[in-house]
Length: 357
Image (tube, rainbow, N blue to C red):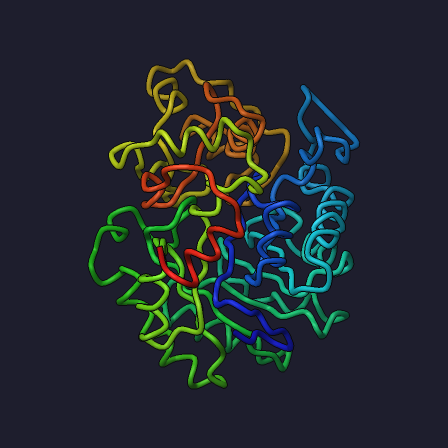
């Protein structure tokens, strides 16, 4: 699979997962094994026990400058490079992030080869990479209409996406669809991919990557047969030794049943898929941790206004999960998360994905 000037041996992109699920160990190892490892740019102030978050209040990073720590992100990228060497390495930066442009520039300065952006339509993404022409830009879309809008807006930069990820409504975390639309046939991945492939032909036919609910080689083969260059998959990489997630987070996934994985309300204003745990129970009972915006992580939350409306702060609860707190943590997973049965190595997983079970 070729994206921009970079060759990726296997047509597999490991999805970016924050806080702290895909950082140096997972992303570095995936790239080493011939896939594209993706570092999450979310919550890097929590890296290595908050070593790179310089201002603390209640043991949490204060404001976006510390929640999205430049020093933390740089350390993560440098440590991933120690694992994968010169292999292509990407960083996922949410468009909804406060400090989006700064985080993109920080990642480029630290030496990533690609930037992946979803959680909004990144109409000005090339603005922040003008000094890094070799960095490939990969937006995430959920419709051909979104791709068309991006390409039109990018004309002012004389740029088109180097690849496009099409994400359906079976993915973990935030969805690009309203709650009811996540269940409609017309919005399922196999139905939104073909129109995006057709739209891409109007803009130079960039590689299309399918994402959301991808689990095994059969899924990869299916979407490649439809015309995709490859796939992005995230949840299955959680059940690996190299995944940066806390052992308790992996345990929650391994013990989850199909009925435990549901769409949840989120401060971002769109549904998010995760495992129903004690957090949701305490929200319903009114005993969940108090919401007080400290990290100022995403713009749609409006400094905690939306967090209070849904009953939890997404930065705090994802960070609690990263630290292994099963009582108050928020545990995102894709719809197939219940299919994870045991922890294996990234090497073994890549063999399964490329050669079959």
